[in-house]
Image 1: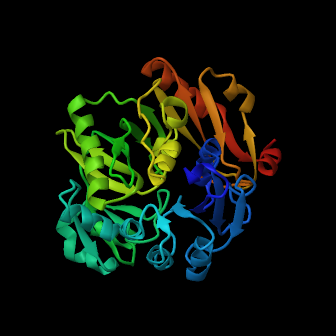
Image 2: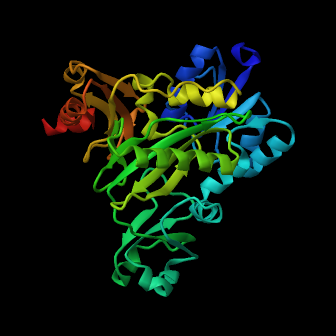
Length: 387
């Protein structure tokens, strides 16, 4: 296979932590990686074979970058799709395909796709601006989601009554009916050009109560087999109906009545799949490579129960990062540290994660609490000032 030789060049749009872990998987396949990112200090800088600084939303920058590689993928959705369409027309393999990225980029298009293709999701109405909320007072309480640009917990606000209208985005978006939740879960599905599909076991996600980010997750789930099968089938159905090649992370709600509703999807590696590096036969990053190279998809079987804890920048700290508690963390059996190579910390910024493997769910939960208390991403200067 040409991809196993250095004359094959994989282009990655985005040089963040997801790209960094993808490059680490590339080394096992002897794949030459080339990365485009707007930041000169991106996490991929220094570990990719080639690194180019440039804007991901600039047509010429993305197009010219694509002309230099054999296959193109993404680690972030906010890229210039027009450039990708032209590259695809000229014969470049791009996975996920530009039409899929275009759907996912806009939550309005994404929700409408679910509705049009019988993918279960919460009720919603489309909005053009803040004033449109007045026309749907009966729809509240609901979540207002901005159509384009929301990321890592941003772009979502809760509206209980019209008294909250000042919180709404004055931009195209949607109102999503608030539903009663039992829990939130995620399933990562993969599909290759030959049509082979595989899904990882579902993970249970616990979100930070304030920042709308995953605080930690646990795998495997203890939800009923019926709900787990339903969730995996929905993820496989969605990636099939999208006709997508690559991996698709599907975040879902589970209601007390046992309904499984799709919240959002991401056509790339995802925070809810980090634990697969240590806990599953095949990681989500290797699975992505297998999918886009049209290789047999790997086993998604779980080797050991696992958890993943996000390492976020601590409140009140901004500046050159310093990690406190490293020695204590690495003394915890089963704890595995992944730092993202970001030089600067700020409150709630994803600086790394910790995966934990253990034989029992009870032990995992105990170690999650221990990990959260042990390691902190702070600023060296700020820490010194507080001493």
